[in-house]
Image (cartoon, rainbow, N blue to C red; front, side, top):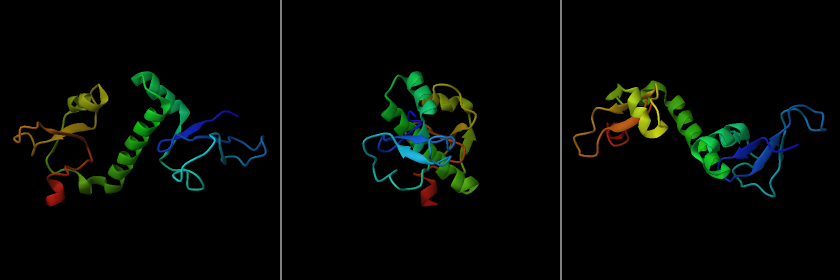
Length: 142
């Protein structure tokens, strides 16, 4: 069976067995690369393991390589997990929703995008973020 997933950290290819027809328990994993990093070898298959279908769609959209796309998607997953873990407690108190602010990162408006109203007077422009992010330069000092 061909690989179904890729590690967003080391680029190792994995297959997740859908059923036990190949003699492997359904849901088990097999390495399809010559080796894997410590990030995915004999550890929980977590955020770092990304379905190849998702990676290949990203590659087509941004004309990149699989390893680059997997690393980008892993970074997005990790940041989203951090936002989810923080909930609203870490949300910048100065956040102002503005879907058009998402164009900077997503290439199109994003419903959760906005900016920090505290920044902008420093000559660097507004701090663009997604809802649930926090402004490290300001909130961390509060």
